[in-house]
Length: 514
Image (cartoon, rainbow, N blue to C red; front, side):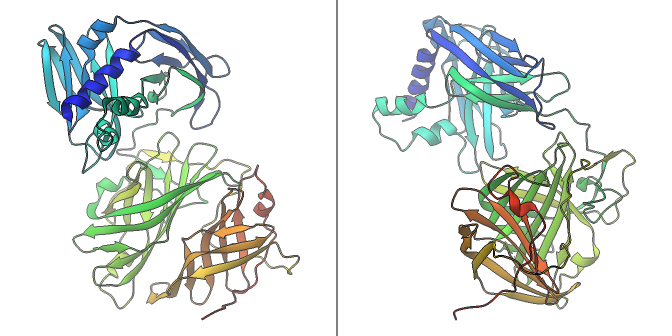
């Protein structure tokens, strides 16, 4: 099987290196402002073809790729299988073999020196789970292959082709669906990015370049006053503290709401996970929420609501807030805990804890190494986050106003799970998981399984989302002590924009059935 697999990739290389028409077009944007980028260099990695974007950010790569077929086979025979990269050279020459992530960032240089002609094999390094590009540079050409690094499997080529028919035509058909080349986009002041393409004829590509930000290794991030993350004077790098535990969340699905009144919203439905540390171990209840908001300035605000079940079966509510300045997607998170007053976990109430949130969309995990920063001094270098002016701010607390009920807008029938109750630092908690349901009237659809009513001292605070039948997503927060005030977050250019106006009140919940 291994020999045949390498032969298939070799055959694919031979076919691609024949005469091919190239017609690739698209637009390059500034990731932080979403405005077109002028003067960005767009290069087709394995062909001698590059252009610069025009005043509107657009580009067109056009031409014909012609390569000596036999020479390409001799120099570029390569594949990745069972954690190793295999390749051959037709003559002695200098070779560099390197691993990059899909943003073009260098992960590891495997080899950079003269290499003898013939067949060679080299072990891949241990990498975090994700998709990577292995690049082999010779004096004449550069070759690239995508692969998937996972804890139980190190090769995308192997994972995609193994288990299929043993017929070589079937294997070739599968291989043909893989990336044929990569586009490298660069511009001074921006982080270079790589985009894999599966055809030499592609139109309307949308490519974003992130501005190069300052190093945050020894920098305090000062949140906007509207989203202080429990630390209005600034959040230090978590690593300056003492490692406390690791949280790993597993999510079923990512929901893209779109541009809302607050910014561009998406959220993750956390269905399981675990927490590991010297003093805190356990699992995560299903129905956790990870709300991510990207502002028009490029900065990010985060809220997480997760329930922990400790190894000795104690419930702990974890509600976290985080921020990231424009140019980075790694959110700095401050964690807040509510543990039962009668438990051995009340030390979580008095400490200060911070982490950096890492989202792995391949493994569908969100991980955080959490540090105790109670005794950390804030670094003098600071990055101040400023929310855009003229845009509504999301709120940490419930919205409060009064009004008289009018016409019915939405009727919700919500399914609930078993309640989780305990007394903690803020009072009496009664958490009732939301497990689904239906909606009617002006919004016809379903209630997404996830979230809960996080009641505190009898006051309701329900967090959940709706999925209308037309494919839209609506985030809901319905809370209040003396009357419920729902706040909706829907796409501003969608059919439910009318819900974004804070002009609604809600009736109290009615329990039906047994």
